[in-house]
Structure formats: structure tokens, C-alpha cells
Length: 406
Image (cartoon, rainbow, N blue to C red):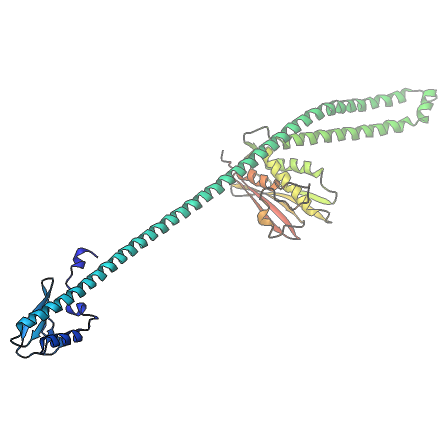
């Protein structure tokens, strides 16, 4: 309440509210010994009795007229005393009212201040919660970024180790394979000379008789077949070494334009040497597939992981089948690896890309294969999607854009 409100004019009805005005008028009549009337400013009697021909004595409150005391004629002095008495009573009552107004105003101001303080506290608390939530989100993003970098470092170290190991093995194997293959081919070229020597022997000579006795014609023919098999085996070993070297081409850090079908064929050739006998691994490559700009060694790791997972999902199921498909859709190349294995449960499928999550037994995996594969495909601006139905099999689809963002 401001000063104007505190000094406001109080009407008679508000001042006398709660006062026994009739009893006050009756007491004044006893003191004056005659009728007394209390009238409001409009002339209406609010207490006491009408006094015909009487005299009116005004009762003011803070200079403003509040009411009038009517007394019989000739009793003006007593009427003035009665008016003074009533004025004192009404002034005391007005002070009580103003004090109450002041107290109520103070309480209202305190309440308003408390309400504003509470609102400010709520706003501050809301800002604090927003700040905490923002910090929590930033921490989560930072942790996720650190986890991703850790996986990338792990992947880089792993692939670098594979590349170094493959390069060392290829070098060590190629040297002995080279001279073994050379010696076998040279030995095979010697066989016609033995056959020519046999033809040059006299038919009745002891050497010819001994030749036939030892059945050296069969030995020469069989030795030719044996040397041919050995040469084919060495060539196969050389091809495997060449495939392994190409598969682990992680020492080339820059993207290359490669034939994706040829890359997949290399991976399949390597994985096929380790698949169980009951698993059928077939390839279905789209003809005329455009060359793909990528990191071939990294993508080979992805395809090897997905094919191995498909083979493991088949377990020992009779008629197990793994199919590798390529297709072109718009500006994207798709690689689909389909198996008819055990499938993935719906409650497990959302977690397969989580680091270190695995459904295999102890010692059969650390749960990083699909995580690393997803990160590699993501680094190629691509996408790795798994669709699976328990008991029916799984399809792993890799989408790779033909243009890689460098």
C-alpha cells in the first residue's frame, strides 16, 4: 500500500463496521438526558432517534465530515461534547482500520517478494537443469567420440599388423615356392630324356631287361603325373599368398579405384579355405559393375568378417548355404551376404554393433568384428544393415557410394 492508499478517505459505513453504534447512541442519550441521532452525510439516521427541530453538530475525520450528531435545541454545548466523544471513538476506529490496511499491505508486499523470489529460484533451477542436461549430453558425445577413436586406433593397429604379417609371410613363402616350382618344372622336363634313353637301348640288352623288370615306364609316367600335381599345388600356394597379400593391402592409405567383384572374389577365395565341408559358398556378381573408390584393404576386412559370421551362424546345419551378391542401385553399390543359419533374436539384433557385445562362447570372439565393420563402412560414407529372422537366416547388406568423400 502506498501513501495515497494509507491516507484514503474512509466512509462512515467502513469506520463503524463492527461497532455497536446503536449502543453508542443510547449512551449519548443517557449523558445528554434527551434523544440523540447520528446521521450520515446524506442526512439518513444510522443510529439513535430523530430529533425534530434539533441542532446538528458535525463530526469530522481528518478535516472531512464523517457524520452529524443531532441533539435537542438548547443543548448545543452538550451536543458538542457528545460529538467530541464520538469523534475520538471514530478516530481510534479509523486508526485501527488504517493499521490493519498497513499490515495487510506489508504482508502482501512480503508475499509478492517471496513469490517473485520463488519464481526467480524456479527459473534459476530450470537453467541449472538445462545446463546439467547440456553438460551430460556433451559428456556422452565426448565419451562416444573417444570410444570411436579408440576403435579406429585399434582397427588401424590391427590392420597394420595384418599387413606387416602378410607382407612378411608372402616374402618368406614366395622365395621357397619359387625355387621349388622351378625345380619341379625342370625335373618334369628331364622325363622325356629318360624316355628317349629307353628307346635307344637295344631290345636284347641287359639294361633294357632291367628297365622292364623295374617297370620304369610306369615310374616315368607316374612321376610325370606326380610332378604335375606338385606344380599345381605350388601354383595354388602362390595364388593363396597373392590373395592374402592383396587382401591385407592396408599399407596403401589412399583410396583407390578397384573392381569390387575382384576384391570379393579374393576374400571368398581366402575364406573358402577355412569353411566347413558342409557349407556351400557361392558368388553372384553383377556384370558391368563400376569401379569403386575405396580403401580396399579395409573393405576386405569388412567382407571377411561378414562372411565368417555367416559361416559361423550356419554351424553344423545340413545344407548350410552362404551367398555373396553384388548389385548396382543408382549411385550406390550394394554387397549382400546371405546365409540360412540360425538367425538373430529380435532382442539381440539392436545390440550387435555395440562394442564387445557377443553371443559366442568364451574364447570365440571379443565382440568387435561388427563394430569395426560398421565404422569402416561409415568411413566410406556407406551403411551396414542387418536383417535377420530367427531360424531362417541373416542378410548383411553393405551400401557403398561410388564417389567417396575424401
